[in-house]
Each structure stands twice: as structure tokens, then as C-alpha cells.
Image (cartoon, rainbow, N blue to C red; front, top):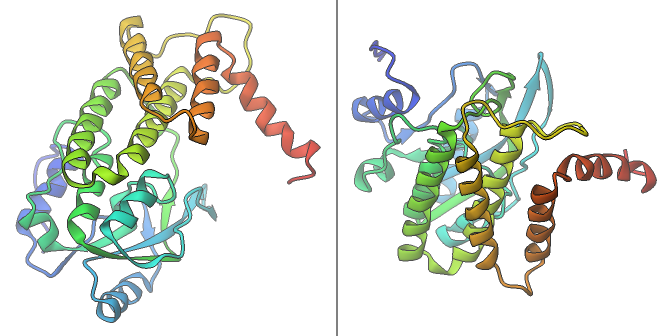
Length: 278
């Protein structure tokens, strides 16, 4: 069935698709990406074999028709429960893209999971809910999806609206996890720190060393930036000092304060040469 409607945004289209769907499974695919010809067969066979409600898989990134292995690689977990799945999601070994998994449609309908309209990071706002509701999931390391990379996509271009959108989503995540999966809350807080930090980096475009003052992102006020930095500091205080991530966060916060992050990027890049890495 093909549904034609006015363009109200990605979230509205997905929510409308959920309302119209009648099948057992739901899968969301981005319009400029493509699938491995064997994806559906592979995933449905895993559903039948392991009787789970979600099957997740890995992908390739595509740059100008050249495919490379993705930065995220599905851990070879096999069948796991929701707690294990959420831990890996928050540790950054998966990523929140909804096209990385196929789920039973009932997970969305019975748990009233919808995509937030008018807000970016809609995948981040929903994937953790699907994993939490699933109970049992299967993680496959097979690369079955081709993610087309464009410099103008919303994952690469950010503005001030993203600040409010991200913070709204993180508050919702915090509330959900604290009430349903409190044991994984420390990992969520570390993920929140990294998401906000990378948003700041992307908005500032800190990719090269400059002696000049780092410019503010388009239409983002200094108050908005200071608000994000304050959130980072708050999350850092919630990280246990014995945790390895505590020192990493301390270094990142210092880099923000003294505008040293471009230097760290170059050090990380050229350290591979000294260590004999490619």
C-alpha cells in the first residue's frame, strides 16, 4: 500500500505509517539509503529461530558510491534481554538508528511508542523505548544496510534548535530509564554526556586548529551554548570518580573551556603514525 500525504516531516510520516500498517513487523528505511537484497530473508529467519521481538543488524556507510565499514559495529551478542540491549545501546556500540532493526509492530502499538513531531533526533527519542519494551532481542553482526552519507543531512548540519530538541529527548530518556531500568542509568548518563559534547563540536565545526576565537554556531546564542556546557558539567558530577569515563569527561570539559579540542583531534589523528597504526 502506498500512502500519499503532504510533507509534514519524517516523524509524522513514520507515525502515519504505523497507523496504516497491519503486518506483524515494522521497518523504517530512509529514502536515500538501500538494503542488502537478503535483508528481509535473513531477519525473518532470525525472528523464527530465536523468537524475539526485535532483530538488529549492522551496516555499511556509503560515500559517493564507495562503501566502508560503519563506525558502529554490532557486537556479536545473539539473543539478549532488554537490560543487556540497553547497556550496549548506551555504551555506544550500536547507535540509535531505527533502520538498524526490524521490530514486531505490537511493540509500538501496545506501548504507545511514536516519533516526536517537529523534533530532530527522533531515532534517539524512540529506539531505547523499543529496546526496553522488547524483552528479548537478537543482535546480528551482519551488514545488511547501506547508509548513504550526505554532508547536508540533518546528522551533519546542526543549528540552535537542536539544542532544545536534544535536551528534551535526554530528559525523557532519563525519566524512562530511572523508572524502568535504573541499573543502566550510569551508562545512560555517560551517553548523554557524549551526545551533548558531540553536538557542541559539530555546531562549532572544530575540525582545524585556529588562533582566532572559535565562532558561535549559526543562530545559537552564547546563553544556549553555556546551557549545554552546564548540562555537561552536571552529568560529569554524576559520574563516579573511579569510573574511567570520569577522567575522559574531565579532559573534554577542559578542552571546551580552553578551546583545545582542535589540538586533541590532531594529536589523536597523528598518534596513529607514532604507534605504527594505519
